[in-house]
Length: 191
Image (tube, rainbow, N blue to C red; front, side, top):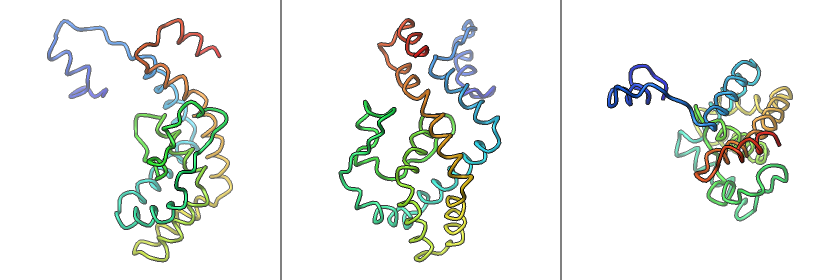
């Protein structure tokens, strides 16, 4: 997106040489602030790397995905209720989203969603890793990830990070709305 060779800005300038002024949308600016803030804190940066590896590990194999589906099948139609921030987004954690969400490198709202999912289903994730340990080759990775998730410091970082990333999430979602105007954005940002 920001690459000098094939980023959006470069492509636009190639097509329209007179286009010189580029401004990120407000949601993107907020995302950049969150990304830079999180990347500057070593424990958060390291935790996000671990979370990315765990989500990739589980979802990169159809065998491990099937294990996850079998462990999560009991979740069924259970509605996940987050009293603080997710009330208005009933579809976010609907039945289709009961499986592990993967991390997006650039969209930190997806990281918030993945982290929220992990904390909500913490026991199930440990069960998934146990099942992978017992059934598949590569169980050393599952053991390592489970030990990591059982680490108290990791749990504290996960909870604090989820809270901090969840705080600007509603604003980020609203800033992406087509009907949002500058006054509404200002009011939302101040509240």
